[in-house]
Amino acid sequence: MKKSIAIICEYILIPERIGGMDRFFVAYDKSLKEKGYEVTWFFKNAVKFDFYKNLTIIDTNNIEVSSFFINYCSKNNLKYDVVNTHFTELCTKSYKRIKKLMNDVYIIAVDHNPRPMDGFTIKKQLKNKIKGKLYHKYIDAFIAVSEYSKENLIKDFGAQITSKIKIIFNGIETQKYIQKANFNTHNNFIVACHLRKEKGVQDIIEAVNILPNDLLEKIKITIYGEGPYENVLKQKVRDNNLENRIVFKGNTDQLESIYYQYDYLIHPSYGETFCFTVVESLMSNLPVITTNKAGNVLNLVIDKENGYTFDIGDVIELSSVLKKIVIAKEQIEGEIFYKEIENKFSISTMVNNHLKLLECI
Image (cartoon, rainbow, N blue to C red; front, side, top):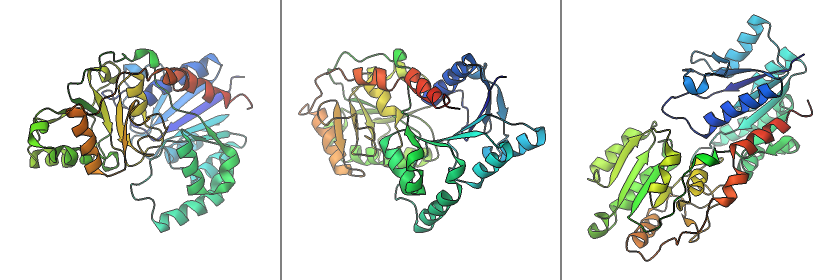
């Protein structure tokens, strides 16, 4: 008898934004089917399009995906051998309900969830600890996407989950990326992220705004992405008369063929669990300017070797880095950055590591 797996994702499918996780979902689905699994996906507000044509997708119609899944399975008398969650809240009562509904189901919970800029409130911290104590036993494996993610899982839900945590790095389709070969800088910078406050794009605007006028005229920053903070950022650009220096391009699914055209990625993030953007940029041989620890969560950026790092929120330091680059006092000489990325952070490695979780079931 075929084994079955349900994958429930608090994740919205967007045709204009096909990223690393979308590519993983499709590759994982194909590999699971080759292993003989019947695979069903539950997405929140899923707009199915050609990229996902081979997946069996149940749309939750904007209902919270875990609650929908439980009700859907109860109504249709469905049971799965494995339930895998992505982007959902962890250690909730839903995991207990799934376990009781399906008895021997093996539950895997993947942590992609960013933490707030200023950390959780005391009330939220206490609530997480209680949830961890009550519901961790219903999750068979916690998957962290970085060492930082693992540390935060333990911090959030308690040391009792430590033995259940495995680290599996996210992956990208490494063969799709065009490697940068020309390192003669033209002061063209790229930003690629979800436009929310935690990504720190507002710090780029402030850093550029305090550059001397003669240097300001030489710099160009292109921002790819959309999000809830987008209008605030655009207004900041207008307020500082930077429309000719900072341009917004919206979402694109062609970043792998774009990165190499720029001189540096700027990623001033306040917090990441993994950070696709930095991995993708280095795979493209593109130097990265990012924040210590938060943006550089995987420790891939080595200061003055394949990029520059600065302290979170330090607009003066970021502006100084940009200034040195523009006046050519600082410049990355064109080392090969992408070799470490090819094996460690490929989609195939990620898929294989997730498949290994199922071997003991």
